[in-house]
Image (cartoon, rainbow, N blue to C red; front, side, top):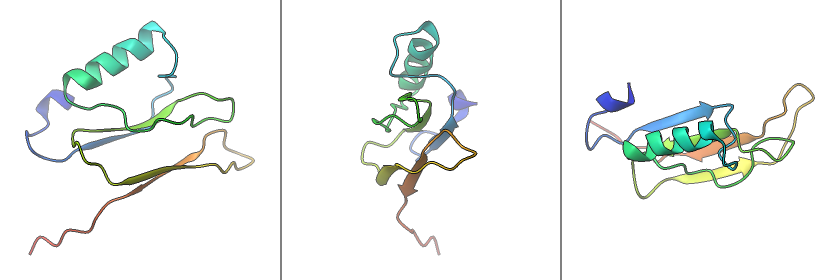
Amino acid sequence: MISHVQQGLATFIVGDFNIDISLSSQSSRHLLTLMRYYGFPPKVQETTHRQGRHLDNIFMNVSSFPLLDVVQKYMYYKDNMYIALALPYIHLY
C-alpha cells in the first residue's frame, strides 16, 4: 500500500510495529530501509515502551512535521507510552 501513496500528499503511518527500531536486528533494518525508500523516515526518537524499547512510531513523508511528544504515562493494562501528535487545522472550503 505504501507504494501507492500519492506524491505530494502528506501521509502519516502510525502504530505499534512491535519491531524495536533502536536495535540493529534484521527486522528493524528492513523496516527502516523500506520506510526510508518510500520517503517515510521515523519521527519518534524516544523509547515508547516500559522496558526501554522503541516499538511505536510515526513515519511521515513531510519534512516539517507537527508537534510530536511521547507521553511518559503508564496504565496498569498497557506497557506502551502514548504518542501525541498535533496537526494544524486546515479549512478546505
